[in-house]
Length: 46
Image (cartoon, rainbow, N blue to C red; front, side, top):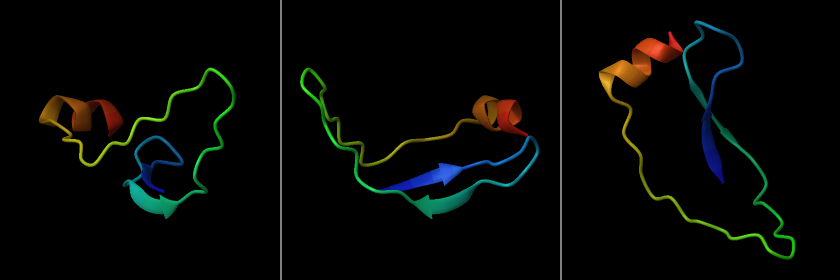
């Protein structure tokens, strides 16, 4: 699974690969194919 990751405040997001989550009883896996960062979201990150 890939994720956009910010390691410190003000850093540019980088894409990293993580292992797929292991589900436990009662968990639900949701597949997200795409997301959008709006200008407001980007202002909160930087």
